[in-house]
Image 1 (cartoon, helix red, strand yellow):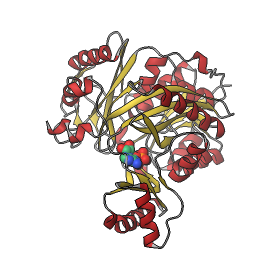
Image 2 (cartoon, rainbow, N blue to C red; image 1 turned 180 degrees about the vertical axis):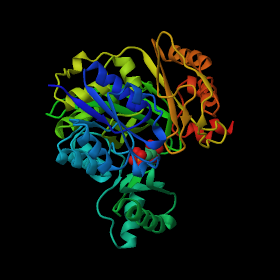
Image 3 (cartoon, rainbow, N blue to C red; image 1 turned 180 degrees about the horizontal axis):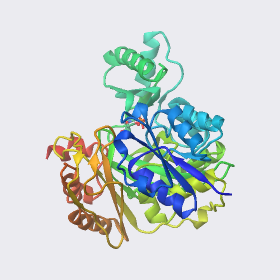
Image 4 (cartoon, protein in one colour; image 1 turned 120 degrees about the horizontal axis):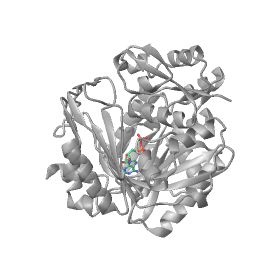
Length: 447
Ligand code: ADP
């Protein structure tokens, strides 16, 4: 059987998908917006289709245009990548109904895990520890509501069940603010997500962000590929990621890994997914499951030798794949630095033309990027330009290798966060692995 996959994305992940398809002998169709006609991956794709103007709503989020392109090119399947339509259950359903295989879990699974209360309930049922809180209907009686919040203990977090992308969340420090904050969150959730349901969680003060990579065959079998630590964040945006997460309580880790696999087996999870946790005081607290490939997937690939994108394709297209936990071995440590087109001092986006650049290379260094000298970074999309990934026997060696890679790397013509990465990698708190999700904003950037 010959396959043709339409890649409904852009940038580095589109290139990553083409590389995986080529290795599997799968033909590719790349869709692009008018602003993206010079993207590198279009030259490596078997077919290309322009799907609309630069604005994402008219191109990469334009479901009819993407489905028409799939129809026109007789593609069998659609690869969503991350961002854009990757976690849109309506899109997955429309693909299914139009006869195109959506490369990822079923629309029903995406919908379930996209609803935070449902996801929390399913996670808890599989033995995953969740953040203590309250997820039943909020009582109309204010005193009853206040009592529930008091029992959880302040500070608490009000969250919209349909929230996402860091929106639909509010911290409440004091009882006086509870009712007002709840009303605002409900209103915002209704306007932003069409669903005003909220729930309460204890606010976890100073955690690390630890996540577990899983892969499921859609038929009730799943494995895990260990952990990643993505605690180096600014405004909930990850900047540096690594695998495995170090200095984790072994007992809590073993329990969590087993529970994650249980969850995926119970929901017949198909494809790759990430279960995200806040980790504090030796405890894991589930926050959400992402039903797609993550930006930071390479660090897991580097320490396991397991190609996650090829696994997505193989599982979706029913090509043979072996998923045995015993076959997964972990080697050394891997780091990823996200190079963004932004001012390193004020984080403002910095689109424009790259006049000159040099990419790093060498033993244990991987470079995933769509940019090149002369490329114009459009202002319409995410600022991610490149991912520099290193692998070495230990964390400290992976850091040294990254510093050497960053020394070789330069981009001229636009600003990037390259100098920020160099500063972080020289920072003692980072080197000692003592940073939490608050460290960058609350301490490092104030130094
Ligand atoms: P989204 O789907 O919008 O990304 P998440 O539930 O994943 O929302 O939460 C995003 C971020 O918000 C987390 O990475 C964490 O930094 C913070 N957060 C979420 N829940 C809590 C909590 N209960 N306590 C403290 N921080 C939280």
